[in-house]
Length: 261
Image 1 (cartoon, helix red, strand yellow):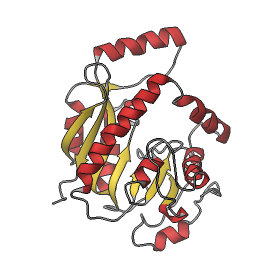
Image 2: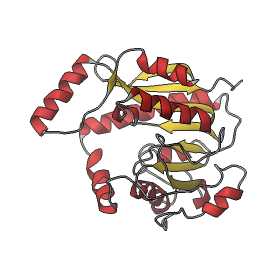
Image 3: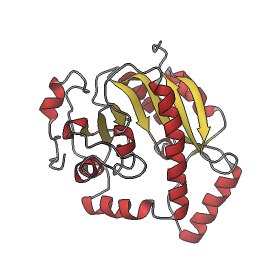
């Protein structure tokens, strides 16, 4: 999908007619600040440090465990929704699960890049997620804003995948809205990350802001609160995996939609 045009996705009409895809995919102008060059720059610098490479490797390790448990009960052949997809860091891993993939993000240029990466690699996307050359129909892209409502039918994705999103969502009402949308479009599972309050990690973040003058502020949620919010939205919390126990605030949660037998 290298030829995405602003305002519509390539293969949008095909998407509407396929029984295994999320239906009509409307898209509107992106409200993200990222430009095409900005996305490329972000991709080059975001995970080049040794600490972030360690984080990525541990993420993949946890995600492999989660998807093994999902596969034992999964029967729905529909695609995975990756939101926010970013520049496609997990595209190869997700396609490697044997399902289709819908890349979605607030940024048009992020969606475009995530789809381009799959084409450029011929399906073999690096990062512990090499896959056997899927055809382009395996990955679609759509600009979407979970806070405003996702442009998908209900119960269409067997897995909603959302990594490194909720620590940017500071308002609990916004988290409630997003979790509600995830529940609506998921037919079975959601895999989501969040940051749980951790004094050591919080100190490290504050120190980094002083040294690097970073303006990024993340939301660490009080212990047990995210789980209650997920349950209030209608999910069952199956398991919460710490990235590095006792040291890092990062958690990945496996959520189950109650209608799943």
